[in-house]
Image 1 (cartoon, rainbow, N blue to C red):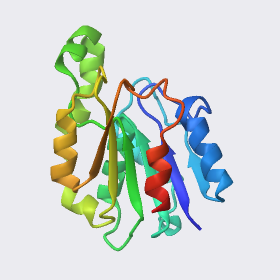
Image 2: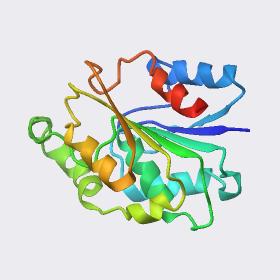
Image 3: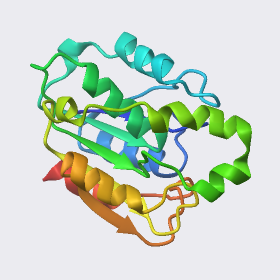
Length: 191
């Protein structure tokens, strides 16, 4: 049976609003189990805290080739960093990343101020071993928006190069916070 772990972004929650609620409904209609966490300290996300939380709450024995991880924004990085630390023998079906980033828009960071810079800096500067990540799956989808105020489109090239990810650029979805549904997620899962 397919299973999905859904990891929200910075300042997010396991809310049923927007595309999170839509996705939960779509997965349940198809008898796909979904697990959504309220990540700790969501307004001040820290790498070790978020990865530790995932390690504590996801049993490695529950991960298999019917498991998907879906992340939004910084949740995508949390998934990548979690996968990087898994034992090499664990294989999953894939990763789907909505508004993923390894770098943020410089103007937005400047406008947001020192506190945001301090939170984002470790996420942008702590490297990820993508070869280790790819040992767990070769199937990645990244969905970005052409007017995301936080995530520059240069991230598309990054994810193509590092993960050989399929990428989709959507029009006028900003950071997908107000988006009601993302049909490409279900299309990718059902392939």
